[in-house]
Length: 310
Ligand SMILES: CC(C)(COP(=O)(O)OP(=O)(O)OC[C@H]1O[C@@H](n2cnc3c(N)ncnc32)[C@H](O)[C@@H]1OP(=O)(O)O)[C@@H](O)C(=O)NCCC(=O)NCCS
Image (cartoon, rainbow, N blue to C red; front, side, top):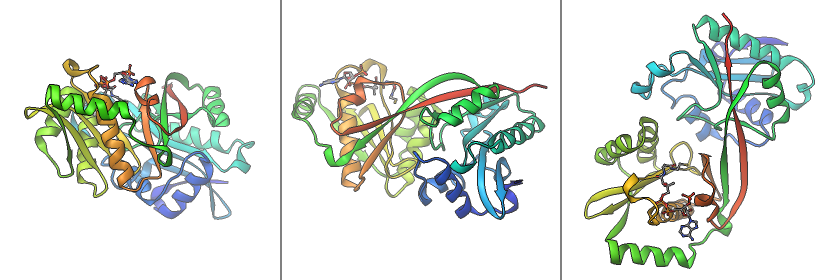
């Protein structure tokens, strides 16, 4: 087995191959691969290392450091190297190949002056927000190598063949309009007023993801408004055509059903864009998403951090 740097080859087809086969619960198509690589302003080919045997790529560690975007978050994250994803082909799981790759990666991060490695809460060009709890071997291996579990989040998956708009949502929509004058707009072109609102009310990351969605042919942002004033937003098609979110309602307007209406309006956009399965990534909310008909799966992710020894 040889450890190689991805930048020597830059073979994106081979990278897609080894990632898909090493991560059986994840499905990485060309659009997603582009989001994780060339579309990520922080992406550098040098931060991916590959294990190769007889010309076949059998394992990988895909790293990233926040050097460029969003600009106001760069300084805060200067000590961190993230692992976006990592893995090894199943038949090599009983070998020490992945541990070897991980050590090489840690050495590389130290050389870059990093103090921490995190897996994988890297917003915004991410595959998953942590390590799937079902990847037993990967979780075990990280813990065994000094990684501390620092958080957990879930992804919801919605089977759109079972999706419909329940009648309570129809009633809520009528009432919101007739009593509060709340309307919903689907915005598919870049709109700086909305982006500014998202940044001020939420974060630079969410602003970034909303902007990506507005630029994508398959994406957009649904906005809730009352008399021209923005009350909330909900995004679809930011990192992938099947992705929902982020979503947010201004603090003063929460608990009135606006979030529920944004959720359904946006899911309808995804349905009418022909999405078979919708992914709602990186959340801790239970009831808000559990109300959707068609929830078919909840994936559980562990987030890890390791402090690098000097
Ligand atoms: C999450 C958020 C968008 C919800 O917006 P909201 O306008 O307050 O939502 P609603 O008033 O429609 O719903 C309130 C709650 O009643 C729940 N609910 C469940 N069934 C319901 C029903 N039949 N009718 C009404 N509400 C129902 C909603 O799911 C939600 O649950 P929660 O306790 O998990 O929040 C809002 O709280 C927010 O902006 N939070 C901060 C940003 C955030 O966390 N975004 C999500 C990131 S994944």
